[in-house]
Length: 359
Image 1 (cartoon, rainbow, N blue to C red):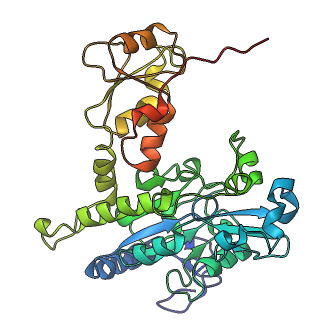
Image 2: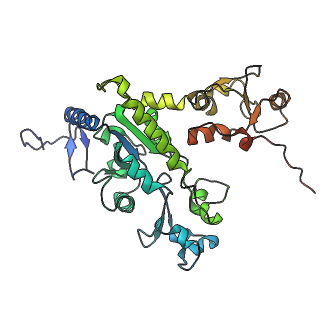
Image 3: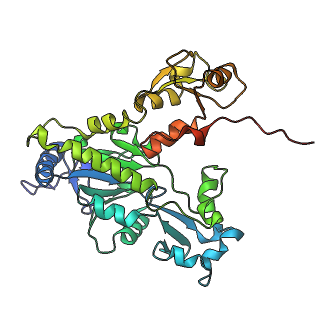
């Protein structure tokens, strides 16, 4: 229905905003007008937009029937571990268990002072609303801003076209980069939260889940605590008082690139041909990752090189790194720096000699 004249529209032009109101569809020019108005209001309160994924970002859900023998203590109310899980483990549906990520409540409380927040999940709406209720029972943070699978305008893809916010003022937290192909510049990729064993199995992770280890992610130094620092940094840069009160032309994507490029600034890395051949190095996923983190990537060793990225201590480049006293680290060193938004101690990622197996 046209909001100006009340006439019912027969075509399906524009974008559906069903999560705001059933059957609500807005034409592109009206979306642009509303976004401009909403942005001005938001900037007046010195806030930006933050889009939050659910599964493996803010929480972890599993079916009760998938619990392993080692996880059965979760259902035992008398188990000592229950004290540690209190307030973070829920049964939203009779057949499911949901574990909230450590620090999530503090994260949401502090982030809400700086951002207008949305939930955006590829899950069904009933599930999304139930998770929103666990995270925000008093409806302080999200209200109606819960976007689910059926709200997407492109299959298997999330898009900011269903958001009442300008792309230049949006930041996204998600554990899956592929679903944000059009908005990778807005994305902060999260390290996946695997509390349940079924979650690690789903992504073919070999290490044990937190539930199997009867432990959990760090509350004060975990993924959410670290990314909150990044969000605060970008927000501070966007609203830097030295830039004045005119926010036109400012873009969160530029600030995010600037913060990311400082992580490995000054590092000069070479990729070992054992897993990245010289003619393929520049198209390998780690090459652009190193560049985005501020490092300089090379194909050959030399005096200026600071790090050799390798998986085998016996290769020519690895031996050179040891001989020249350069850092010899696993590819995980780069990924860890990306997830934690700071250079990681090289000693934790050293390439070591393989242990000899006794026959």
